[in-house]
Length: 224
Length: 117
Image 1 (cartoon, rainbow over the protein chains, first blue to last red):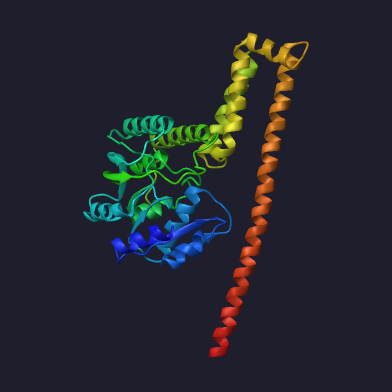
Image 2 (image 1 turned 180 degrees about the vertical axis):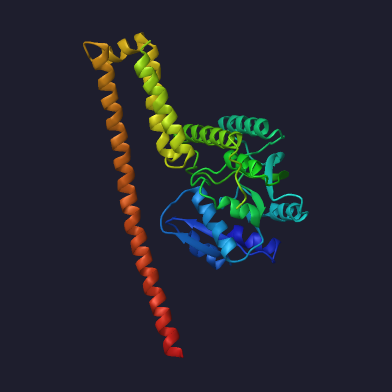
């Protein structure tokens, strides 16, 4: 974690780094703080989405205009931060998503995961009538409008993925994908291990269906 | 086909989906009810399935077998909710302790600031 923070700061000295410590019991928070990051420690594990939302709240409370979110396991290389920010700064989109399928994944993506991403990419593409290659990517850069949108109560506390992309689209926010290189995370227990993939697929299908039904019924999500 | 259980299964599924849509039921808790409603739907349509359930649960007739299955399902739901309540109780305790520590820190900082002035 310390190396990741140091690398992000070395590549772009004008950014601030926030590490959301989602109830970890090791020295992650201290190491990140020592490397120069702001650290928010949650008292217990709240889930990936809830941790991200904590970061969005921090960014809005402290007046940040743009945010890049990335996983702390090293899967998202810091070298891509500037590419995402540069694309966001062009001003014609509100959200930039780093796609490993437009770029390159420097690791073997397990078949089940590749099939899952493919399914949700096709589904999201069909529902938005756009070509989407990596709807489950967590490497994203966003402006304040998206930050406010992500703080709404429908933001999932566990797996914010293709369902949020669909809601972003239905809310009239503009997004695009840019190619990135992703690496494999460290070995260990993934949030997609055990029976979780089954729940993940169920949850995303349900959430996407409800987002689609809500939009069809005229319940277009307002931006604020 | 049994029309009443079939209608009840569809009604249960509709209620669960509507609750999730209105965000009064989280997806995390909906899957058990969706599973239950789907099982009820299938068993209402499929007499052989009811027979197999009855045989599996060592029951003399289909109705009793399905009832036993429903009781087992509800036991599963209660157990699931009990574990969730236990987790929430633990988390509330941790949160309360965390808030108390933060309040103490804020008091100390205010006291120190007052002393400096």
